[in-house]
Image (cartoon, rainbow, N blue to C red; front, top):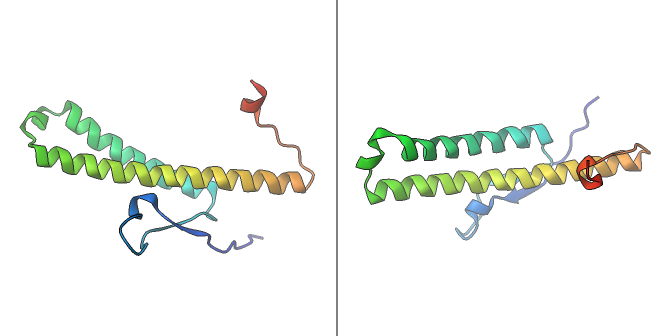
Length: 113
């Protein structure tokens, strides 16, 4: 049986400073869903930057083109960072729940493994 978790909506960092928040992140989403969204944004930003850096037509880009691509990559990376932070919070909540239930959790990185 799946328990529906109420949404925990937070504005995306990329939307801050623009007045009323319109783009919201559901922090109660599953870690997998958060990861997939972060991955898609980072992949898109990486692909854009790769095209500019290695493309034969990159030399023909003017300053405005480069500025537009950089702004789009920054927005995608900012959204991905927000998603990764939410994924980390979801992991911490799941870990706390499993510890409350008596399960043992091993986070090997903190143990130097």
